[in-house]
Image (cartoon, rainbow, N blue to C red; front, top):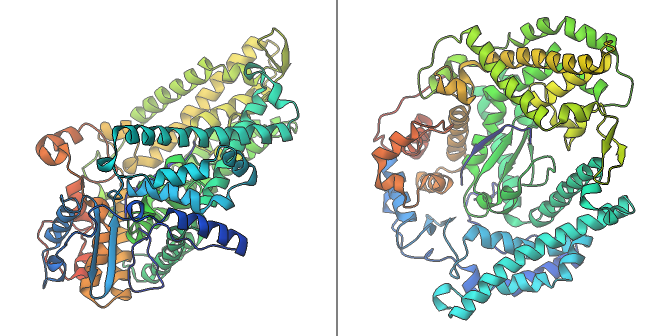
Length: 631
């Protein structure tokens, strides 16, 4: 996957249309169409046994005095909430009321020992059964899988099972997973046979590479259909959609008020916010999001695609208002800003023109390629003119000091080593040789036409997965153009010269990319050598907090409900019992040996209690903090 993902872990969707924050209820679903509604309602009704749908320990007594106290300590309030959430009484599941409003966190287990997020995923399959692709549903029904899932969801708790019942439940778990996957691949085979008659009879080793790639594409498309069927009409996802628009509107209100921003920058930021697309997890076949579709507690902003999603594990178990505020902020961060600059630069446009020439069946315009090489260094110099927005603010957000400048010789060495590794990998996998081979061998000694012949884009499932600074993609484009336009008579000389030229151009491009990433880069080597420290995550926190604090104040005048809303939106900050909690000093030492985009856990609890947030919560600061402000 050629995507950079900016991510956060957060909290469950709630309706922006209501001041009351109602937690997800699990099995309810809004149906469209009378036939679908009646079928799905019947499926859902058959699942609603008290044991399966209720939370374990979620209704134990919970004192809210620390929330309703007069001017409580900020960090103390968060820590008290976390201790209660993962106490022996609650174990991750918590329900409480504040001034007639109901709040809920579902990070624990059901009364029959499902993790809440796993129970919701299986239940969603039942609820969305009649929206699944008809051919897949037929394959699943032939295995009687719907009834098996219902029975599995209704099993007893382990404490009430006999050994034989426990074994049957284990087998059912494995059987459901195997049957689902086999039905998916059966459906894929039927679709491929329909589109390519005779495909099902081809031995695996004889399947043309072109058809193998098409099979992978069709699988991703099928998985995207399933994701839409499962979650598209689910009540908790619909809450995400409502909340997303509510948070986006808050951005429209906050951005014009931010100090230190020019009118031009405010306008640009508003345009970026309006352009973000919210997608159902797993619904974009170009993104590998299997875990996100099922039960991952996470959220993602995809920098190159300007898409945002909240994973099913998140919106089914936690509140996600602040998560959305954080993820939307990534559309404004230094990574997105740099990507847009690259795409709109002369070099970026030239790269896309080169891709169009190389990846089509049209004759390559070798004069244009020669012109690109002539102006290559000039285009690279233009890329190096990139300047990050709000540089001093981003510098303040860095968690450590970095060297003030990056030596050009150092950048050239790192780029060269990186590109040599990429070229070595491509060579070892025969990619260069395969690209220039009109025919490829088959296991029986015969050969067939090479579907990837002189087409570097053929090595990607999706055409738009090739970006200007992707080392594999750009190197193959450079190699192919140079090989096709070379006038050398000797094939060996022509082949070697094309590889060497591609390496040389790619090294220059990679060096420029590292340079414009600069001190805010997440590049591991630059971080370890003290030249960079990423700021994108803390930037998203800082901007997202301004917006979420604005929402709390605008949506509710009752400070007790604001505090409750803040806490359930930040339940992901609460750690389960862990080694880090038992041995915090050693944990901090261990952390110094790896790069983490988010600040340390305990520090992040403090970071998310910004000045604006403390004001909204009317709480007393009980920790030292360093505030970064726009200049």
